[in-house]
Length: 113
Ligand code: 5GP
Ligand code: ZN
Image (cartoon, rainbow, N blue to C red; front, side, top):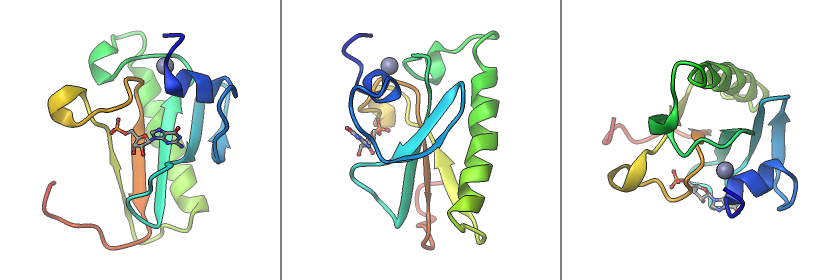
């Protein structure tokens, strides 16, 4: 866990372009944006992915959804946006700390989902 990139970002040890923070969550701009708005929302606590959540920790996903709604409004995404989380190798997860991508600012492809 000490080597986790997003734990280091959450701790302020690695800089990020922060857009939202509260006691449980941090949101910052993705370093390699796939759309005009591409923000990552993470819990400050380390969970590898959705697969690591249990009944006690799962409510953090609801917190992330509500933060996403606020951030999307602040970013002016009045016409919609996409929220997604990758899980494991086949899901394309490269950073093993739970995160949701908030993507928008353009009409997104309908190909995948
Ligand atoms: P994943 O592929 O795991 O779902 O998403 C990881 C995301 O983290 C990628 O979109 C990647 O661009 C982003 N990322 C990787 N390293 C950094 C970093 O050091 N800073 C920021 N802001 N984003 C990062
Ligand atoms: Zn972590």
